[in-house]
Length: 179
Ligand code: 5GP
Image (cartoon, rainbow, N blue to C red; front, side, top):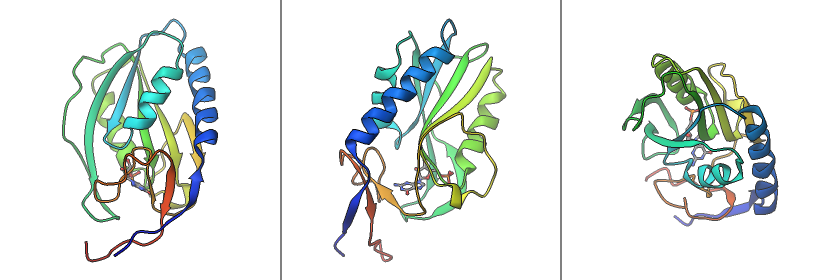
């Protein structure tokens, strides 16, 4: 089935401006601290790269891979850590960088799991949030944009592992149920 993209949900210009603001805010809030920016792959890769470069203080970079969705465009409700961090986070200030907070299950799981390693602090930064879809209450400390309950692709976000390289965020209007 042919995929039809609607209008960009967030334009490249809006995104650039917002990420610049977020980077500034994070630089101010974490000045003098030992900040580890933990990217949640794969979805956050594009946002992460832009956000990290908008932060004006020295930071550490690290990544984890989680799976929360199967090949279909709906949640299984299960979250699994597929890879580990490369460095200890004990005593450090961790900022989780997510592409999108949907049900909230991934963020809830990650904050709980990483907190056990005794970081000095742990906060959450997400480019997008779909508040309508929340199943568990999670605290988001830095949020780029609230979006409506639509499946979006591009700028790191996928549909069946494709479209991550679209340079903007678009609504996937038709989802092939057979796939
Ligand atoms: P949550 O655990 O909050 O339900 O889901 C978070 C994850 O679900 C995100 O990191 C992302 O991988 C995926 N996700 C949620 N909504 C969307 C969406 O609209 N588009 C895409 N491509 N992925 C989504």
